[in-house]
Structures are given as structure tokens and as C-alpha cells.
Length: 104
Figure 1 (cartoon, rainbow, N blue to C red):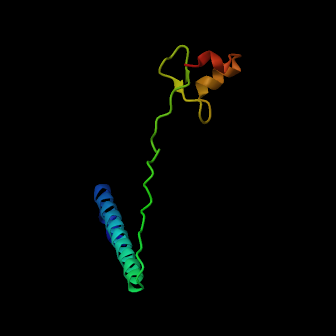
Figure 2 (figure 1 turned 30 degrees about the horizontal axis):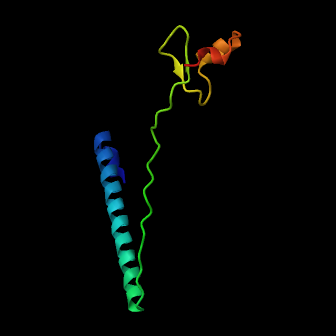
Figure 3 (figure 1 turned 180 degrees about the vertical axis):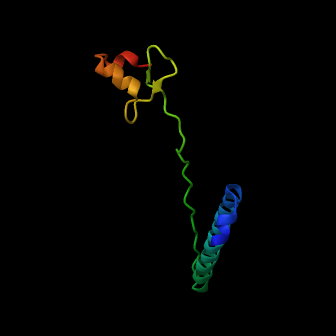
């Protein structure tokens, strides 16, 4: 394992990516083998098996959320309304303003 310590960050990343690809390939091949075995066993007793693959769900990862609030003076400061309010919003609210004043 100490041989990895001598690699650069780029080389380590290449090793990781290569290992991940190899793992996915092995898992895919194993899956195909198991499906083939299932079909073979079913055929041995005159049964037909139809295997349905689950539909891949689209990842919402990275989906943009619309801006709900904008700073009145600095148009670059925005907030979606999710999570903890940014400092500028907290400051305006504590100064007596209402959140609805800053809705987009």
C-alpha cells in the first residue's frame, strides 16, 4: 500500500477511476452471469423467465432551485429560501424588515 504514497494526486485519481471502472465491469458481468443461470435453471424445468430491468431514475443532483429573494441594494445577493437564511437576510430581518419585501 505504501506505493500509493509515491503517486501524484493526478496519478492517484487515475488509479481510483480505473478501479471504479473495473469494479463496475465486474458487477455488470456478474449480473449477466446470474441472469443467464436463472434462465438456464428455468429452462431446465420448462419455464420461461422474463427479467425486467428497473428503470433508471434520473438524478436530481445538481438541479437548480429558483431564486426567491434578492437583496434590495446588491442584486448579486440572492437566496432560494431553502436552508439557513444568508447573513444579509438575517441582518435585514433583524433591522425590522419583512421577508416578503425581498421576494423576486
